[in-house]
Image (spheres, rainbow, N blue to C red):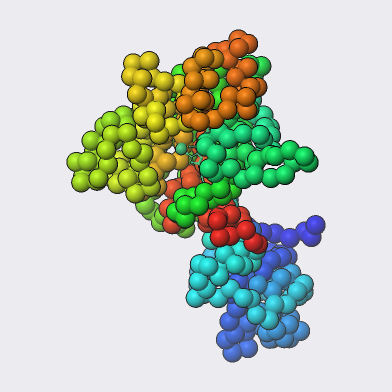
Length: 431
Ligand SMILES: NC(=O)C[C@H]([NH3+])C(=O)NS(=O)(=O)OC[C@H]1O[C@@H](n2cnc3c(N)ncnc32)[C@H](O)[C@@H]1O
Ligand SMILES: [Mg+2]
């Protein structure tokens, strides 16, 4: 590894120090007998200046390089308030690693083109900022989960059945059998709680969703927790503590990157502290109807309805107590109202809607068989899962957080596809 310093680490108080930088040409301009190159690396940018009278060789080389050329530059630090970062490097040496005559991404590139060349779009500091925030949110999640006594486990991705409905399964040939790509690790996490009690996993989940909305991917990163002995209200507390910690840590560690997208509009992020507001599904329907939305009790809220509902809040909030008919087979019936299940979604404000789906699970064997049959599925395909209700069954609850959806809200992105390195949607499988 070359003994370079990072662009962001070049400071005015390093005046007179000799530094070696390695990165890519971010901006370039020639003024008289000077070439200004703004160099970019993973930390940020710094301006370098090549003066003919300082080094004619370096000056002539610097004139050749194109945008996004990879270079190593050496020179002396000089404080200069006119430079983008208040400091510049008076360069006397440049090694061109690879010159780029024409970088395909230009200022007026369309979103579709940027997705076509996503592998090159990752050069962008703004894209890198999204990935830094995503990584920091997961770093924070790991910190919180460790201190709260949760065990990380590694569930399978090749599975034999649906968790969230058969319509969105990706099917594949598995030797002489049929397998599917996992929609959710949940059922396997439910098995893991009998030895570990509180478990979590971060896995890719797959949904053959045909819906082309700004919040659906066909492959997304899914942070899922499952806990023995917890009921719905317990797991909601876990959700709000975890999400709050993730968001506050991101504000602390990735302030610059968040401001790149939100500027100073970070009120809703700061508001993400427990207790998050809680409304029932019934109350949600009343609110929507009072705002003129054409929705009846028993119907599911889609992205549009959730967008309107989020206008009532300036922080993430819960909607709990959904009708059984619109929720999954594994959710426990509400003992106080058999029309409902003990389920809760967490919705992000500012129009983003659902970021977490969670519930208390049906822990009674017979009732679960009944629900599986009610949903038109074959209990034989869930024999192992039903066993969990035969050998020491316990009340338990869990949830799944869509990491890209959380990132999209934190950075106010207009589509979840920007929150993932290589987005997968119905129309996009390449690059
Ligand atoms: N362990 C569990 O209890 C999780 C549960 N089995 C489950 O998968 N619930 S979910 O379908 O609401 O998905 C959970 C979250 O996963 C995200 N999600 C769900 N589907 C998608 C798609 N298609 N694209 C992006 N993100 C998605 C979204 O934030 C949801 O709230
Ligand atoms: Mg859901």
